[in-house]
Length: 267
Image 1 (cartoon, rainbow, N blue to C red):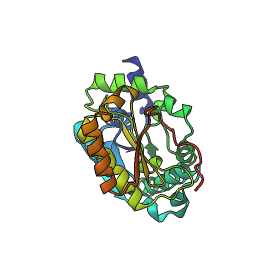
Image 2: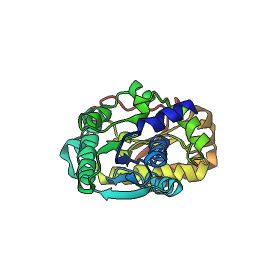
Image 3: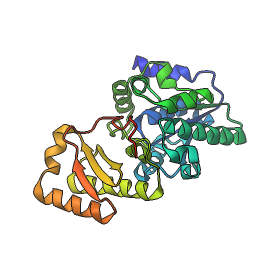
Image 4: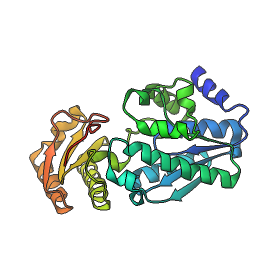
């Protein structure tokens, strides 16, 4: 638990902290440590910006209740931001830049000195311009600064009793849409519903439905692909995905890979 002590020590001499709570295990551990160290002077805030799935929002609420930390939800729509909707390679930067501004406004209204998030060391291995936006706006990343990897986060979360220690990683629904294809409410809705359908039919928890010009490309971990190839289950899933608006459905034979759509698709 030495590393956890390092995380606790990071919050020493911090008078007040706002934790950006996403619904995942990384920010959950940060919220847990902040609350243990500085108590009611730490609060959690989740942004419901309309590309966050209802599953992640519910997870954030559950985490806050488990910890006992005060939890606020702020609402706005990223779909009002043309820079975001345009969906070029800087989409994540525009997303996190707007998030930073909203969090800064909220923290200022409460007189809170510092905002922190759940970025950890492994996040730096992928193309994530959103992290740059957070840091440019002064948001700090305790896990990154204390050298936590994802595996260490999970181990520590389990040791302190967080129920979501093994929760699969997730990301905003817009990340399922290739660069160069506009983000719309219709696409986001069918992506979210599609992923719920697959989870309910198969029990698989790590699911991505990529929306590529109306084609649903389903990604699951390679060792779970056989579950999708059961004829009965496959036919049910394909039928339901077409009912919610997808014109074609494919199962990616290479399985789920984080950041797979970090390339530009031309319309």
